[in-house]
Length: 265
Ligand SMILES: *[C@@H]1O[C@H](CO)[C@@H](O)[C@H](O)[C@H]1NC(C)=O
Ligand SMILES: *[C@@H]1O[C@H](CO)[C@@H](O)[C@H](O)[C@H]1NC(C)=O
Ligand SMILES: *[C@@H]1O[C@H](CO)[C@@H](O)[C@H](O)[C@H]1NC(C)=O
Ligand SMILES: *[C@@H]1O[C@H](CO)[C@@H](O)[C@H](O)[C@H]1NC(C)=O
Ligand SMILES: *[C@@H]1O[C@H](CO)[C@@H](O)[C@H](O)[C@H]1NC(C)=O
Ligand SMILES: *[C@@H]1O[C@H](CO)[C@@H](O)[C@H](O)[C@H]1NC(C)=O
Image (cartoon, rainbow, N blue to C red):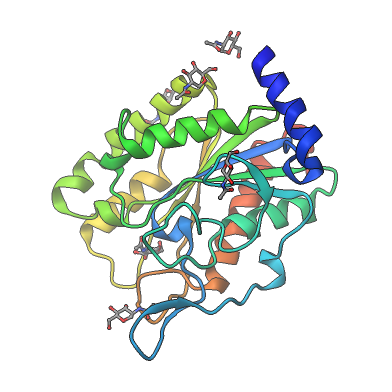
């Protein structure tokens, strides 16, 4: 406690408001669609690039911060996962439109801190307790509270990599274990989780199973928003910017209607 107060005072003395501790913290986990690929395209050498287009729904805002890879609060801007999902080309994801929508709907909400942790192509088994991804999520969550603030929810967009016969059968128990362990390790027994129900135009039986596990998750503090109706990049795999905005706004609506007791809509 003393150390942490000392550290925060040192920070304030040295670097001013830019690194100020946000009040409302959201953890972002999952795979590529959470990391964000909106606006990505292949250039003439077939290298994936981001087009750099940031629509107003995804714009930076002085009340939206992100915890960078260095575990420092900095002003948030797209691509939110740029220094986290470093092996991929990151683009627009649901995080910025989520935060902007909350501030648009509830101007008195207070500052928002986003903690990006998603990595493209990850199966849920790779997020089990004790794994690199799990430990990093817990570690970054802890660091996000260094100078105060409150973790308000985990946003989770994942499941595509578990659409094999074997993995889909184990998805329900793996997801439950992940959520329960995280709540325990963060010591937030009722941590709200808002996840995205995955879908695709040509979904097979295993994607249907994952989707139904997500949409029917039975927990007072878990909500699922539906990605059905999304539009995709030329790769037919990732949500485009328009659909990421839609998903981000759905996540915000779910949070405000279910978990924001302080500011009822
Ligand atoms: C990360 O933090 C260290 C120590 O605070 C600092 O020296 C370094 O410049 C930071 N790196 C980035 C990329 O922010
Ligand atoms: C996170 O914080 C909790 C409570 O302060 C502590 O019990 C736990 O060991 C910490 N975990 C890590 C990975 O730092
Ligand atoms: C966990 O949280 C409860 C209250 O929410 C608190 O009383 C308790 O001290 C915390 N435990 C740890 C290990 O931080
Ligand atoms: C991205 O999300 C869409 C919509 O749920 C899904 O169809 C697609 O498989 C996902 N892609 C990846 C790589 O997760
Ligand atoms: C949902 O969970 C509650 C409380 O744990 C339980 O009583 C209920 O039977 C469960 N419903 C289903 C459909 O599994
Ligand atoms: C880029 O090209 C590769 C190879 O043709 C293809 O698999 C991929 O889906 C393309 N990605 C995008 C974002 O268009």
